[in-house]
Image 1 (cartoon, rainbow, N blue to C red):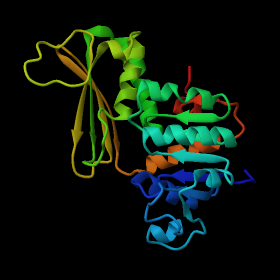
Image 2: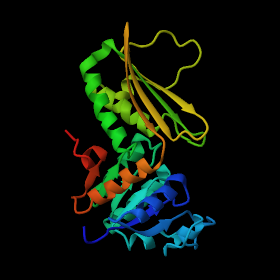
Image 3: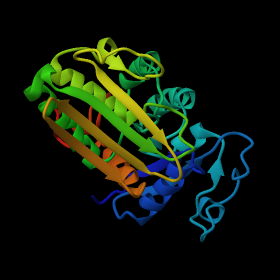
Length: 271
């Protein structure tokens, strides 16, 4: 690739924002051209490299996303649901590839991205890790093969600061399991158990969320039947796996037709 696409990182001061800045600046396939933070943030006006405690990178943090987007070919966005919706409008106007790793979005908020996807490439996934997306594919296939004789439980663990539960990845895995069984997750999900809940509902997909310390991300899909259990597992020990996947998506989206895509498309795993 002779031309390096320019990438903007939104939420640049966050854990993922800082990791994305590092991964992009280390890449020989892309260049960092913008870093966005909310109005009033202490980093606004500072060089992003200096703000992160390192050397200057020649990119000032701005609270004006439109100004940053005007210089870019893609934006990578791990922020909050409403912020992502606002960025989607601006990214579509600028015809940027919009890579969305934001979690905690409702079905209505995800549907609200549709108008933007008519004008620009949107790649959205509950998890940008290559390994997790392979796990998702395996979950779909195993769920289809085993059928309802096996109970399905999805157990996820994250750091103490995570604000949404179940995680976007856990829900992505739940959707895959439900698709494998030919049912809608909304009809079979058990997202919280407390007190006298009664026996487990046959055919339901259960979720359990663990929060503590600095856990980056752990996801288990447990298939349990009388006399045997199968566990599919992914453990992330470094946020760089998510950043590398997001950058891969931003590069993949260059030149693609407008539309809504996910990491399965990026990895060539779509059915």
